[in-house]
Length: 178
Ligand code: AR6
Image 1 (cartoon, rainbow, N blue to C red):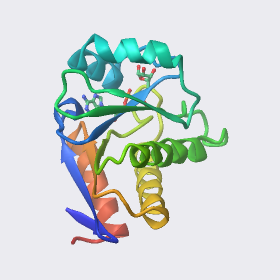
Image 2 (image 1 turned 60 degrees about the vertical axis):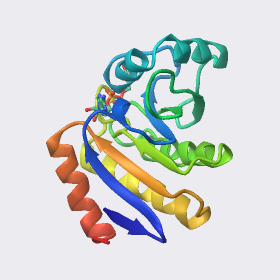
Image 3 (image 1 turned 120 degrees about the vertical axis):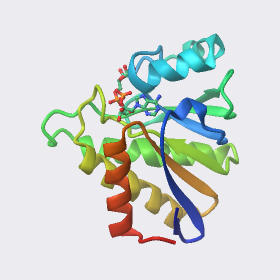
Image 4 (image 1 turned 30 degrees about the vertical axis):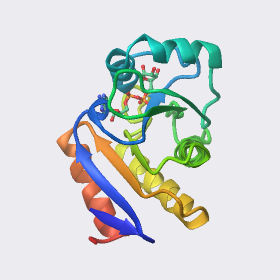
């Protein structure tokens, strides 16, 4: 467990669909109509109510975020955000990934949510290098806490042991253990 300005920052190795947070974040695509990876897992676990709401929303630009029910999952909401497809690091990928984290947190604030769980956005199918993506994720969260200190806990849910250990190392370096 880590702490930054009174906000808990935790890392968990596992499946984000099992989290009991106010919101879990989905690494979606621009259509919001589902896909593979964490997106597929969230739609399968949450059931058809999520897709119904996504259809009404009608898509989401890269770096922005939209909110739906979490359906049958234990959390209350799903915040769908779209990270960039990584090409060579020169296509504004870093800013877009940062925006995905920051805008998800802004939306959670609008809904008065206190706990939010993030997957490692863009690091699967979209190919973003994991260590760089981790640093961007942490920077987005810390900047949000600097700007609007209302959230209580941010949880990074990592699907592999390797990515968990990477987050642990980078959080140790940046924040240190609380
Ligand atoms: N819980 C937590 N993390 C997971 C889970 C899970 N159940 N499943 C996978 N991950 P990806 P992207 C991790 O590919 O790169 C979809 O088709 C995974 O190990 O899910 O943003 C969308 O529809 C990786 O570290 O998302 C888009 O088209 C991370 O989640 C596209 O993929 C993100 O991998 C988005 O690609």
